[in-house]
Length: 112
Length: 115
Image 1 (spheres, helix red, strand yellow):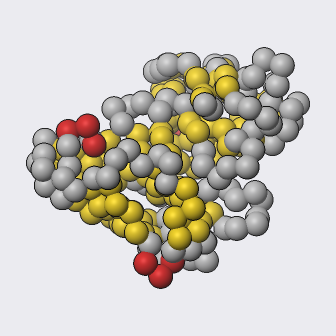
Image 2 (cartoon, one colour):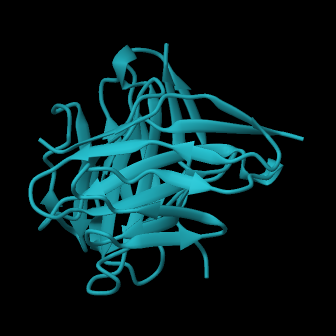
C-alpha cells in the first residue's frame, strides 16, 4: 500500500540555519505530494504541494521538489526563524483517491 | 470565513465508556474526513463523507467506531466502548468538490485519552 517515510525528530536548529526534512514515499501511479505544518495549539495547515514530477512547491520560504526518480519530496528552507517551530508532516494523495496518507511528522525547534 | 471546528478539544474517559466527537466543516464543503494520530505516529485516514454519504470508510479500525453526518453538515464520531488503544488525536478536515483537486482544511483536533 501507499506509505510516507519522513525523518524522525526532533530537529533542533539555531535561527537562520538551513533546514532539510527528508521525505520519501511509496505509491503506485502519480500521487500528489504535500507538506502540512501544525503550529502549537492549531490544526494542520497546507504549507505547499506538488502534483507532478519535477514540480516545485514553495511557500513562506519553504520549498520542496517532486522527485519521481528518487520518490522523494524533501522540505527545505534557507534560513529558519523561531516562528517556524512546529511539527511538519509529509503526505501524499494517490491517484483516484481523496484520502491523504501521512508520514509520522517531524518536530522542528528553532532556538534564538 | 470560519475554519473547521472540533469539539471537545480534550476528552479524558475510562476504558469501556462512550465518547462522541464532533466536527463542523467549513460552510459549503461537501467533503468531510476523519483522521487520527496515535502515540505520535503517522496521521491515519479513518473515513470520508460526501455530503451525508460515506464515500470511503476503509480506515475505520473496527465496529466500535461509528461516524455519522446527518443532513450533510456537521459530523460525529462515536467510540463505544472505548479501549486504551483509542487514545490519540482525532482530526477532522473538509474540502470543496471540484476545486483545486480538493485541498483539505483541517481542524485543531480532539485529544482523546482513554484511561
